[in-house]
Length: 222
Ligand code: DX5
Ligand code: ZN
Image (cartoon, rainbow, N blue to C red; front, top):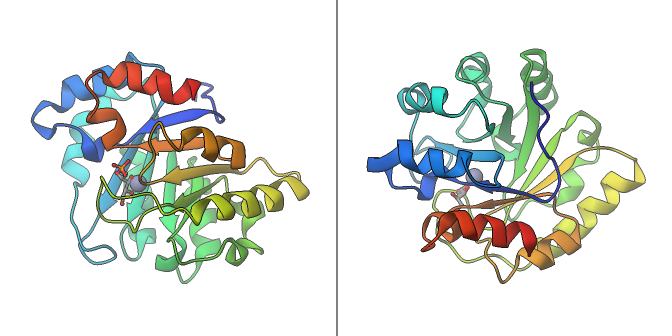
């Protein structure tokens, strides 16, 4: 796999794109300074919404070769589909802590398929639950909204969670990436980076901007 940046990254979330115009939306990301693309998979069970699934990933896969594809699974029993997502080109596969009974096994499985393994935490889940799994985790996605929908308001308590997690990672000298997902914008981007975030997912802030390419650049420079 190519080398992709893993700090000061903006990962546009395709959920906020114009689905009637996906090809152009993805081309915009490819030609921008964003090297990651965030793909939200929702099943209507783990979260109260259904986004998109395998057929869409099949269609967009040829457009995404130059991107690090960051797949965020908001589904129950995500272990059922690990190989399938690998075949669909996922670079990072993130499962929810709250959806995995055997999280250690699931992360091992993801890595054995050649992908990086991420764990997402809902806003109510403390970072301390990662105490015994952090070494196995390539990325922690801190949800800064309740998962299920784009365009929600950022939950401020996330900033403290970032600081705690940053400390846990640095104390153990790990390379685990901290990603923030939900309600990211130009007003909070700097604060999130200062607290220790590496990757900021941005949906509506990017795709809803008059100039999405410029917005990505502004978020990187924030
Ligand atoms: C929410 C998703 C997010 C969402 C972010 O459940 O996980 O990735 O697309 O959208 P914004 O940036 O609009 O909050
Ligand atoms: Zn997401």
